Length: 176
Image (cartoon, rainbow, N blue to C red; front, top):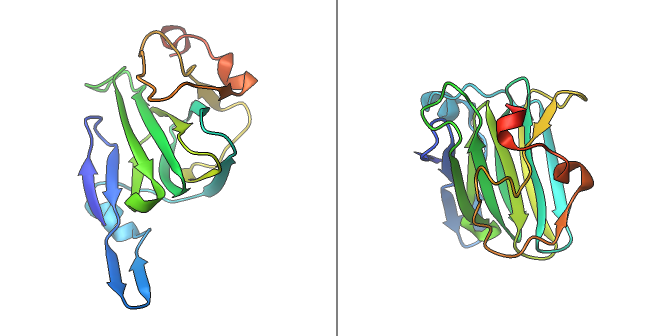
């Protein structure tokens, strides 16, 4: 596992190292010691797989009001993944990091507490895995609209489907 810090401190792109032979390959997806070596103390408490049927679907931006750590990976298809730094004390507060991830990349994205996260699905029938700490608790969730004018996210394809809940988030300056 190779950890590469992004422009948002505490957000890492993690490249999985494939060990290949004639049968296929093996790649480690979790190693608590490697995470600790990179200054990350992450105890996974909950995990989900999301299937999105149609490209153009946006999920997010979501965060927990009581600091949430996230680890994500595309299992099938591809996404445009965006992380917003919502930590007022951070040097990169209000900035975002975005990249395209595909199932064939064998990469994961780790986000530290205080960041908001969204994906735009780039292919039909995309499957996406997310691991979290702490566990979801009703009433603890916050969000930012995908089209919030504070950020002007350069979505690479038209957005065609957003949940009613995600469309109701207030502008960033009003929520945090």
